[in-house]
Image (cartoon, rainbow, N blue to C red; front, side):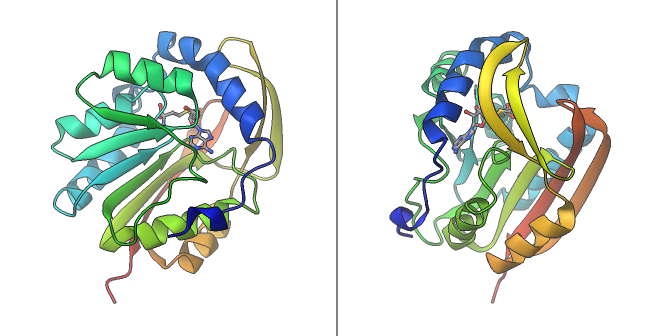
Length: 219
Ligand SMILES: C[S@@+](CC[C@H](N)C(=O)[O-])C[C@H]1O[C@@H](n2cnc3c(N)ncnc32)[C@H](O)[C@@H]1O
């Protein structure tokens, strides 16, 4: 995959700076702890079982790495990347046995058919609507046949312009809300077949949430 073919979001630096700013509170508020969300945890456990024997797994937008560590404990060969250096500082401090790197989902240079699983766990909703399809395309190519992608994101219509987050810390980012059918279209274009869909009416971060699992076709 030639990562240079993915357009870089115009607001990438502003989004990065915003996550650097909220990272301490994000950790303090323990927001990455999957064990506090029983339905999300069920989906993640299913993903872990599905990709267990398929090869390396990449947690894209891993934040402070709690999910990366949770899945490593379940036997996955996993590493995490995140746009925010401050998030990765926390990840390395909290989970010193795991592998983390600073990188944008738009600039990963993933080798074709190199990953058994990819997570975009509440980390792709800042990608502009024109750019998310390019990132999903790169994920589709990076998965081995039968490999799985799991996405967690905020469900709805339109865009939310966020000016504060995680304890009223000033931020500048857009949260792009998605309807499942629209995401499925993008996933199909990326060569990914539907596996599972979970809609959560109970809010995560103030809006309903959505989990989609898709699989690279075996043919
Ligand atoms: C809501 S947090 C979720 C973190 C983690 N996945 C979790 O569940 O705790 C969103 C994360 O996505 C990261 N992020 C946002 N845009 C990104 C991008 N273009 N590439 C990589 N990470 C990104 C942020 O830095 C932040 O750590």
